[in-house]
Length: 505
Image (tube, rainbow, N blue to C red; front, side, top):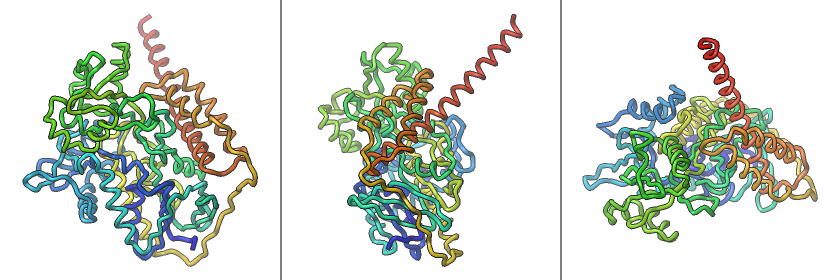
């Protein structure tokens, strides 16, 4: 059976929680691009932020911290929804079996992370995302109305008169699946960069599909670079040293072994991520060295091992004992604050198309995400999307679903070798922590050429092609927006200088 009420693209927390909150009367398909647990959710270490049975905290304070971290560019309505609905969603996943660490008294242990004024981060050791992903997936597998399609590559999505058609490649065979409603929960865009903390699936496919269908994309140039990724300078997927390590008292040090955050922000190591990443870049210029460390050796070794068992073990594999050694770190791409524009119910500008999680732009993050708000956002807005779909399904007609046609070119060649590598190099050079204005314009022209080659040429429709096309589309959108911003800022600066000259000479 290839007709469904709802098709959910993505098997991370946003996709799974959408399915959990949809009516059991609906026939639901969830697609997973690769294996079920390969997603950014499973990599989330720090925790989930929220006010839940917290007498010394309030949603109002959480909202305030979110606005400060986001440069006050956050959407007021959705940010209020995010923080005020945290309790009901945290309570629900606990009832679904998610286990958070507790204190000796039996209360939940809440940790502190950069930008938070209160201890409000619920966590499961240093593998919170994996714990949530595992427990939600276990529950979804018990739902008789939900089908999960693993190792299924979505090659394209088209809007039809009755809903949506998906071209899905599985076991080297293309099949068309149709639905009345669609939820895009495909995660981030990290693989558009040379180095990222994101998993292999994060190629921005969902954003590219939505854009090609005509959905509005917003703030896609708002990209977060995490300041403390393990710096081995070789691997594309960088191991993250969680924000929670600094939350528990770790120091940042330069190549001389000196702390330096006091020179850049009064919040020191607990400043928001963009502030810390920029500080590292300024310190790189000042010291002419890109060698930096995170240091938690002054803390009790047993505490470190028990609080961060996964990070401790992983670093041992890499040759570092975090109870004794300074750990090399450097910023790398981590999270996307923008994406597919949605409203407070996660609906895109295309009717009955929803987007949840990192691929969406709810506006809650402003220009910089507050630590551990991402898992919360995925829960809050996927639940709201499900509520809207449940209500609309009450009035569905019995009109048969229309199936769109998809072109599959027989005996077509593979895409030219090296396209994805070139895209990543352009993005790493032009639009890293501190963008290179000259490289922005030059890079955009080349990315536009690559995008046109992929979108107009006839190539074999396989994973290489789909991901390269997605990366080119995402890179095009990022640099297009960044160039527009750079041009507008230059015009503003020129106008201010002209006014200054007029008034002073």
